[in-house]
Image 1: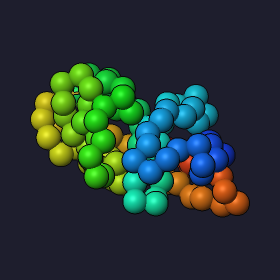
Image 2: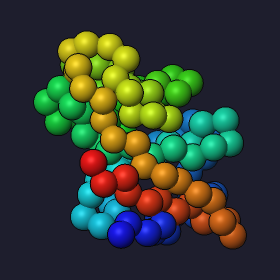
Image 3: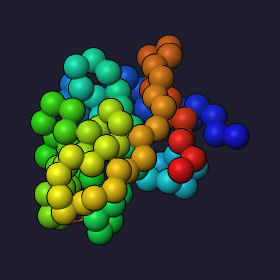
Length: 105
Ligand code: FES
């Protein structure tokens, strides 16, 4: 069963910040938007692009390879060339730390 794993301190990731964290051998893109943290797989479903290296606008991340966009809150794909959603993970903040629980999909 996946558990919440501490990945960073709240102060480590500023507003509109993005980074990659490793959670149980899985690369997860972590975002901080409007005071809330969000986590999705750091893998574009088009051709494996590193999503956290893309451009973040509001709750949308654009893949740095060919520009497919995903909603960081749900992992839903928003634009081509990707056609499949990526996986969103659970995030909680406790005691000044950010925790991620993998969604096993
Ligand atoms: S790898 Fe992400 S759009 Fe192609």
